[in-house]
Image (cartoon, rainbow, N blue to C red; front, side, top):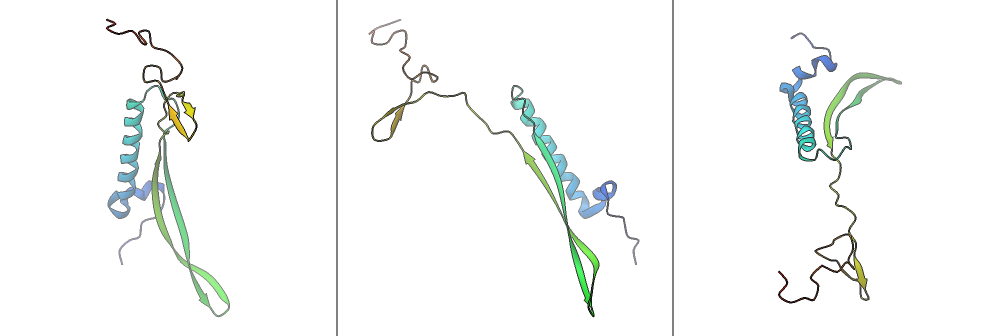
Length: 120
């Protein structure tokens, strides 16, 4: 029988051809790339490694014992949502909304050349 390896953080890279480590590294790169893409967004990017362990029970007579466990590793990435500035919308009866393309923060804002034909 082959020698068994302890299941612990230091040996996870030996499990399943290092799929856990590769997944975590991939998510870290994605989080770093998001930091590069949005340096002004100071909210945290979160990489989480979760390991779920489920006992394998054995019942013998009236006694239940644990004969092993099933493990599932889950790697997750949480990025801040993309958000715009607050946009100002006017509303009309019937559920219609409108905005000013030149001034998205104030739908009532008139443009400098509003109504002037041939403005330079």
